Amino acid sequence: MDIILSVIVLLSSILLILVVYVQNPKGGGLSSDFGSPGQLGGVKKTNEFIDRLTWSLAGIIVVMSIVITVRQPKPKKAEAQKANTEQPASEDPAKSE
View 1 (cartoon, helix red, strand yellow):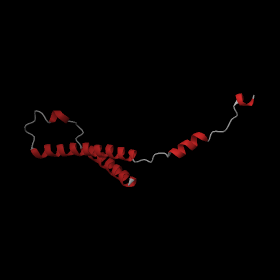
View 2 (cartoon, one colour):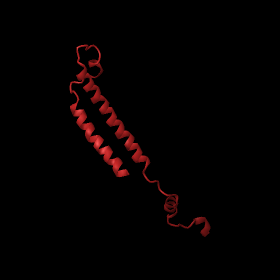
View 3 (cartoon, one colour):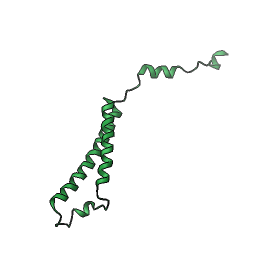
View 4 (tube, helix red, strand yellow):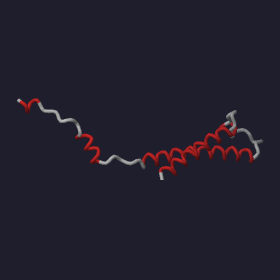
């Protein structure tokens, strides 16, 4: 299952890189949405699609990364206690007197 989630993150990352390269390098952003009544619907819808795809891919990467992190195995209590008790036994100077 972790391999599938890792592959999804990897593919989403590659697609996100490609989508960012497709975007308009001149920017535009919110300023292009306001005050441009001459813009045709097709171009505006393409920009909206690319914006939504960018945010969706970023969201997929974040969610899948959190899921992979939560699914990591927890150390068992017996192993943790054993690691704590494996310290070398040293004699207490108060007992030797």
